[in-house]
Amino acid sequence: MKQIYRRMHSDNVPPDCGSVEGNVFLGQARYSKLGVSAWVTMIERSNKETLRSIAMTSSHSNTASRPREDRTCNRRMSSRSYLEEDWVDEYCKQPIVELRIVVQNTGNTGRSSSTSMVSVPEQLVSVDASTRRRGEELMELQSDARFVKKIANLDGTPYVYPASRVLEDIESNLFQLRLFESVVIQTHIHARGCSTTTKFRKKSKFTKLLLCGGGDGDKGGGGFGGSVTVPLVIPFIPPP
Image (cartoon, rainbow, N blue to C red; front, side, top):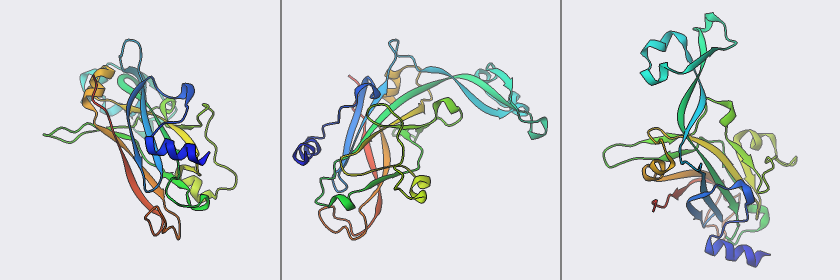
C-alpha cells in the first residue's frame, strides 16, 4: 500500500473521488516537504452561466447609495428590529462559481506516521484574478448560509473530527489529515464580472491553501525542525 501512495505522490495522481469532484479540471499542486497534494475542479452547468440568487444582508437606510442593479433585488424583512438600522435580507443574482478542492496527505517525506499529521487552519478561500495593472481577488461567499464552505470525505459524507482530537485543534482548523487521508473542500467563489465559467477561467490565475505540518522533532526527510505554516499555491491551467 505504501508503494502505491509513493507512486501516486511522485506522479501527483488524485484519489478516486466519485461524484464529489467537479466536472471541469482547473489545476493541481503538491508540497513535497509536507507530502501534501491538492487538485481543484469546478462545477459547470450545461449553459456555462454562473448567476445564482444569493442572500446579501445590508442596511435598508443605505439602499439609495447602492448600484442600480443591486437596488432591483427582491427584499424581505429579517427578524432584526428597526432599532438595528432596519436590516434587510436582499436576494440578488450574482456570479457564483463552485469549486471542489481535493486535499490528500501522502506523507512521502521520510517521516513516521506519528509525525505526518497535516492540518489546514481555518481560512477563507480566494482565487487570484490579478492583472499587470491591478491586483484582484475573488473571495469565498459568506453572506448566504446555503453556500457556506463544507468539508466532505471522498464518498460525499460530511467530514467529522475524530473524538481523539483536542478541542483547540477542532476550533482552529478546518480539518486534519493523518497519513493517506483525503478530504474535499466544497466552496463557492463570488466571481465578480464573470457571467460564464469561460470568463471565470480566463480571469482566474490560481488559488492557495495554508498548510500546517512538520511536528515536533521532525528533522527527517521533511526538512522542518518543527511545526510550520506554509502556503500551497495551486495554479490554474489556461482554458483551451
